[in-house]
Image 1: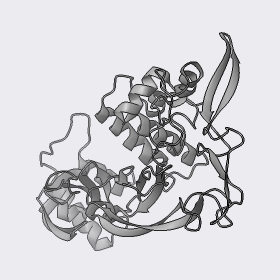
Image 2: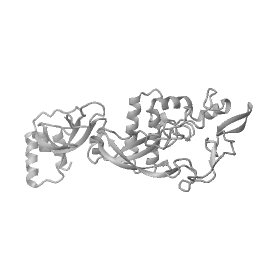
Image 3: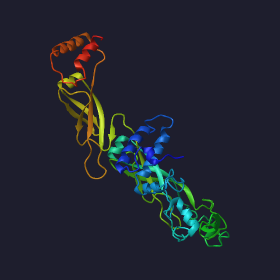
Image 4: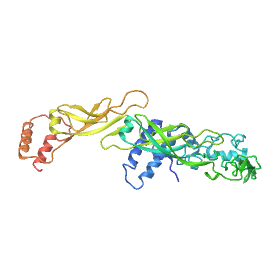
Length: 380
């Protein structure tokens, strides 16, 4: 049984879009298969992604708040796009079909009317820097296409056509159902002729009567700079082909951004940690810091404390909408040497003696940094 989507993301039912997005990013990083090697990490990641896909979409969220979970083939299931049938009623369309003959509101759908094809989803992994600067790429998508031999009819070229015996050419068949309200007669699209009202005496040898074949289509993608993990690219008309001359569905490419060994991203800002020596922190120095654009110079002022943050403006991730970029935040961490020569020890001890009378500003409950180091050297 599926868990409540709000419970999965750990947000309240009245949480706004920004809170939902923040919760998703946190959990996605926690359970991403590239980072978390626990046995159930991938399943948790999929659960988080599914919850976010629904709660981040206004229409899907409204439908979920009203009706909750539904059948995966009719509602918010895995691999679905939109989660509703052509009537817009989702799993409730069958109920309206039963009482009103299809489509809801008493209207019957025309089996020969053009229908849009199904949407497709493709997951694509990209590098951290590719998400920052964007890229162009070609991907191969497995999908269905109209059979070139029969042009979608499903019949052998030149074969005789006859009236469907199941529906007598109407394209619809009656299905009886016993309900608490009595026997209901419902009209549905004929499964034999798929609503066409006619069938070919001989099936197409290429598609075996399906009218469609499996193909691999190469799609050119233009990934914009600044995309984040979980972003979706919509490629219009690259989904499954439509029915009865209807338009093809769309292709949704879900981007999975790989973690970086050095950089971390938070929105449009980038964070990193750089080690510096005690001398550089005490006396000040100019150090080189890696950025996604290459190395840059950073001035560390004298007296810098460990875990101090410095900002490199405009060295973050480009904004998807509008101009400009975020910033890079550099946290410096003072690295204490593990081994010292006798001469180095003498110089450090001399420095301690020189600072014996110095006033060191610390929190009332903290020891002086120098006192703690002095005791460490004495083995206390």
